[in-house]
Length: 211
Length: 358
Image (cartoon, rainbow over all chains, first blue to last red; front, side, top):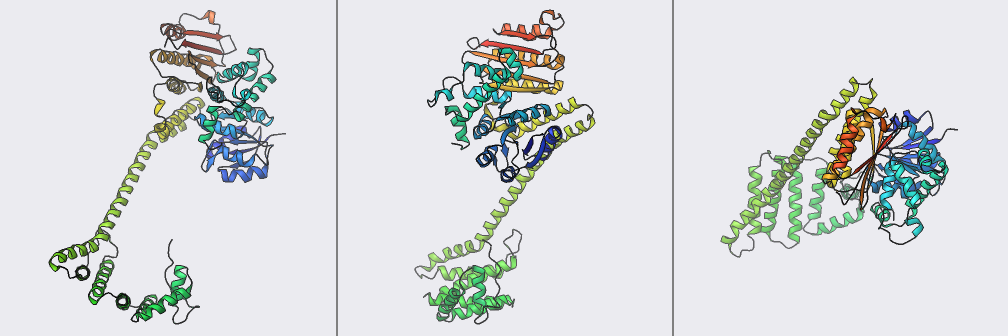
């Protein structure tokens, strides 16, 4: 069965372009261009995945996640943005998005990212991997839960390879792991990004008044 | 809050519905207004006169009837407040004069003719009011004249200033619009024209679109990134932009950490640019991934494509790109180059140098 997808982006042309590219592989059941429109629409349609712009005219993508996630826990969010700023992306991730891809992504890559997010996996673009490495850089710990505040060497390795443009199966081959293990490392990093109280992450989130 | 225009109430009336009309306009209880008029009526009949004035006004009678009734009404109020005749007449003259000025000019627009009669009336009134104290006429009279002139010219000057501000705002807006129009014309429209002409060549179209996007982005958000100049990541971004434009590939940039660009970092960025160019030209892949990582002790840049790859041991001498521009440049800058490639498996160039060397 095709995944049911809602697309939230304030650029009509961009939405049309995305639908043209992924419309055959997924079922785009709704579109919205503002936070105010998106929240009731997502509640009503209860889609598998919401593709979410980081910036909207009336708020951030994180506002939508915060409004919808509590009563629609099955809906998965994937941030799709041209934003270059780490704090914007981290804010959406911390609100609960399962991943972040840049808008230059190809239709094929986007379709597979939607599929992965729908299955509960995390989707890291190279850029998000770079942000995550930055966030968990050495020497910026502020106590809290040590497990959440550190990346394991393996997670770091996986992230570096993602940042270098490797696909999961290439990473698996290179590190002698199974693809499933690579996926679980990435999911762990996502969980740490969302739950860690690390200074960098908290600072980024505070800038967006999430904390 | 915009007041509704005043009209007598036709359904709620004691005499002519004037009080109810005012109450409706102001959104208050009619009884309150009636009470005020009743009290004013005790003040030398002022309430009655004002009531008549408003009645006349609401019936669109001659403005003179309204003005005279109103003036007498207000005079009566002022009398009742204990002001002497002179002040009352003075105030009445000023009010009458200002009314004339307003009516003749319509507005205080810059070119509106000033009513000489209005000015005279207002000036005379102001002299009367301000010289009332009788302390020292010779001192007060010039002050009174100045005050009256201020009364007359003040609103006019104020209006002038407002007009000028509005004009300036409009001019700035116009200039901004011109600038945007010029920018849109020089870049966006040109790009759209190019895209139409090369519609059958997707690579070119994509390159045009990306260049345009970058330009617009730089223009729109450029001033928000003051630290953008001369860091490793900005040099790599510029290199990626050039390669995208020249070769119609997509270059995806990721980074962790950044550092200011000194000579060896600049050399590193140039080597990276060369590696991107090689990937774009020879690999056949339409995507090049570039990742830069800066630690306390090391700078690394990875340039990777998923193209045809090659056998690094069998590179011919005419492929000078790798040996000179990349390996040689890195060696001179005290860094290292590692090329990982195999036919059919893409290529990754790893450039690294220790930060103590840089």
